[in-house]
Length: 325
Image (cartoon, rainbow, N blue to C red; front, side):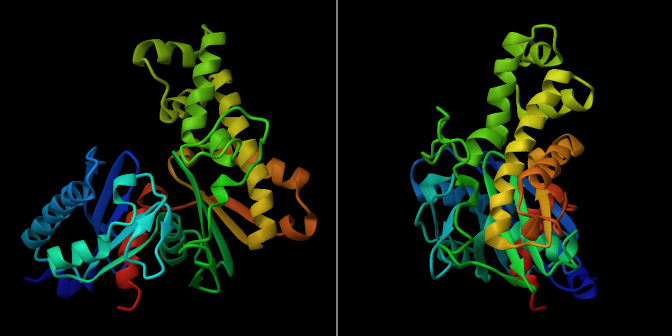
């Protein structure tokens, strides 16, 4: 029995991140029926990095064969800028693949159609098609992880006005006197104060000052304070962890106010790994937007958690192929 023919089209979605690549087989209805994850390769040569991703995709295709699924193509989401012909990316957090023709490489390797787009743009596409953004006219999806990105959809159309995406709103300068720089070289940008890396840095500093805190105990046990552990401590009631998350939320609110002036959304969805903090993050975001924003731009904006979560990159990437089916 051919499951693919019975349940509609399927496509492979690949979400390339700085620490890992998540991939899956997605149905026409937005359901992930096969999942796979691989660490980001540490090679310097682009051919070696691409080969590791290709092996992982090959593993997914083997599982498709076992389930009698025939994917119609492969969608790839990468952080950074997308080339004008949408066949390569630059300025990503997998620098070995900067300007490498990913689309050509994968299409030749697997003899399937391949499409490439910015990862935050694809998160917006997933939320618009299958998540909390289905009724929005002007949708912004903010993705908060090790970096901060944004995707914009206006009247159902993906917006890519600057370098194949909507530019770099995560590098909006909000704290110019800050000593901290992001991995791309900006000093005082939104990523330096509100990303998962900023949360880890601030939580580590707080733990050294508050030895009685859950943050300090976690740091002593693990040797590091990943953002996920800060979120866990905050949700368990640790006051210092809550303060760290509140600070990150307030910075996100500061950045989001300026985004509203540029993008004029009616709905903003907050996604990415840090969004797991829920209201510990969302409440200060909403408070700051209401406190400092120009009412003409922010009074009617609804700010909510993204519904799809960390699957948005996979589903959005696959949707590049499924959109016309």
